[in-house]
Image (cartoon, rainbow over all chains, first blue to last red; front, side, top):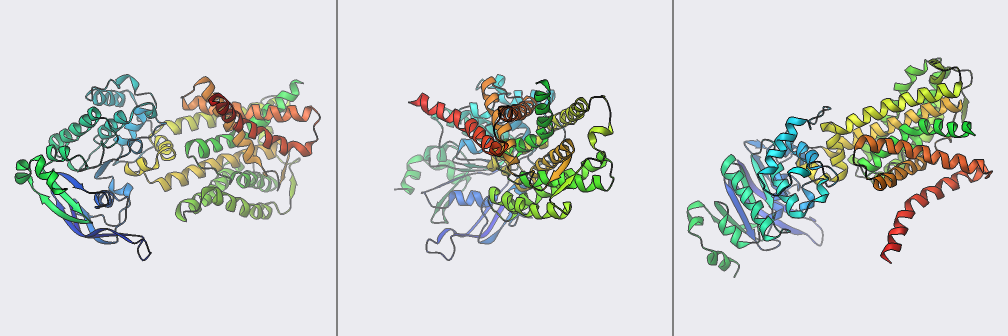
Amino acid sequence: MISLQNIRKIFHKGKENELTALENLSLQIKKGEFVVLVGANGSGKTTLLNIIGGAEKLTSGSITINGTDVTQFPEYKRSKWIARVFQNPNNGTAPDLTILDNFRLAALRTQRKNLTIGTDAAFKKKVLDKIATLGMGLENKINQPMGNLSGGQRQALTLLMSVMDETDILLLDEPTAALDPKSACVVLNLADKFNKDFGITTMLITHNLKDAQQYGNRLIQLQEGKILRDINTESKVKLLLPDIYEWFG
Amino acid sequence: MSQFYLTALQLSLCLGPMAMGIYITMKVFNIPDITTDGSYTLGAAVTAMLLMHHWPALAVLPVCMIAGALAGICTALIHTKLRIDALLAGILVMTGLYSINLIILGRSNIPLINTPAIFNSFPFFKNDLYNQLFISAIIVIILTLLLNYLLKTDFGIAMRATGNNPIMTKSLGINNDIIKILGLALANALTALSGFLVSQYQSFTDINMGIGIVITGLGSVLIADALRIWINVTNIGLQIVLVLAGSFLFQMVLAFTLAMGIDPNFLKLVTASFVLLIVALPRVSRQLKRG
């Protein structure tokens, strides 16, 4: 599904503050895998996700998604395959637009936005049904601006929006960092469900090692822009929390 | 006295499309677009030139709007492709347009007294002012309905989201640059349409008629914003109506100022002070509340 070959990313190249974020990193991710990325601050986790999503251009190397070389594709073109949930709950939704309008845009992620009105009764019903699955009581708020909601609610809705259209890959950059434990649990369980139900290839960055142990079927530890550990499904099942804590000893 | 209000109403209707344009750039896209001063005069200059060449007024209208759209596209390209600040991009295009407008006009002022005007192409009423009001009102109503529809379509939602959260729109497959280019084209086409209407209403085009006109549009949008918060309007169609109401209130204040016998030389100063007042009042009252 995702293939990274010899990825290098250097920030401020040639300047005094030159910083190598990713150093010759290669990685193959199969369809339906749920990869959890861990690593200290500055190890390159977010840069890696941004490079796959297209928010950052790489210095050298190449990226293939589903057999298409997307190395030169801008972010908006990669959204054909990729949906994202950001660390900051404010980034994933437009605050002044209603919940309904936000969902409408998400439902057109891989399609053209035409000069027709798409927020009709049938679409409203679809959104209501989706939101009801969250059990957050947001069903009667779909005509309210997104900005009225809490960070946890917005993050859960952003995740829900990511499956309104065809999605192959879901990138989650510390989606629960700004959330209370209960909302965090809702969001991660939902991501897990999407991965299992729809076979969406998922990549999750987290600093919560308990989540890293509990979720996903592959665990990768990054250090200084390189892959330090890559634990596959069989070994990850056996992996216990104290083992992971030891990595960061 | 009623003539006094009607004239203010007429001028506010003529300037209504420009106010809608400013609403698009400022409220929808969050971009301060100063191209307005130039594209307004551009619309008036194209109108003057084509009417002098005996074009029917109705045929001049789309040409004006296309000219305005091109000006907007220039600003948007400078802003999005060269990554130059939108404010500077607008100032550059506005400055350049001054020369272009002079070239189109050939001199600094063209009277449009013996040429056909959109207002006497369709004589619905015998009274000239009523006819002008009626025709301007029809144009403004059509534009309001179209803009309201546009902003509710899928493309319109994409436009509004681009101004509200560009990080999100990029991740949802939206090319923010293209949307901004189309948005600025639309806004400046509307502004040029105001130039078209005003030049025919006042029966002349002057190279300096656009100086500071952006403030009039900004003032209308700011008044509309204050009204929107006050009566809590979320419907987009109503917001556009409020912008038109803002345009009318603005013209009323100016007409009232002149009627009080203030030297017309002070008019721009009064305009600027009035806009400052609208911007500053909510901030000052908020600070007073906080103590």
